Amino acid sequence: MKIKSLVMLASACCLNAAATEIIYTPINPTFGGNPLNGSFLLSKANAQNDHSEDRSKDFVERFKESLERNIMSKITRDFADGELQEGVFDAGDYKITVVDLGGGRFEVTILNEITGETTIIEMFTPGL
Image 1 (spheres, one colour):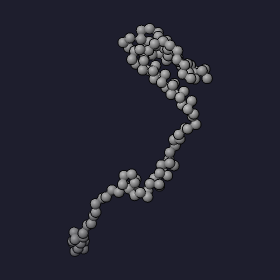
Image 2 (tube, one colour):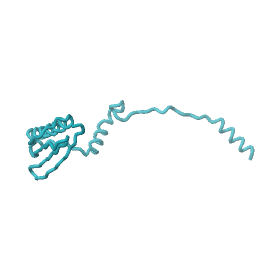
Image 3 (cartoon, one colour):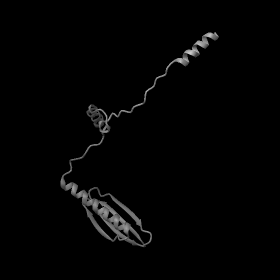
Image 4 (tube, rainbow, N blue to C red):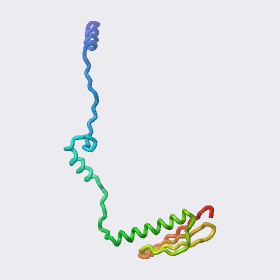
């Protein structure tokens, strides 16, 4: 039994071990991978894409949305700068009314003229 163990130990010590370096090979052709992977990766990405671009809006609709965004941006910017003044803004389907309640408080009423839905926002500017 001792001889068997001794032989096994000697043979284990004499065996050569071989190893190689780990080499990273990219898959994506953009980063140096095989160019033949490009169409496969693109088809996989398109299959997983849940987003769709809405091109059904015409120029007038996009222009109207841009004006609405600009009006809301102006109201927000004026409020942040402490320069918000009373007034009524017509933004397409929305009518925005700003009322100065005094003491740095403002009430902004947003009326959706199509559905009749009204949203009232009270804002307070400290320091005014």
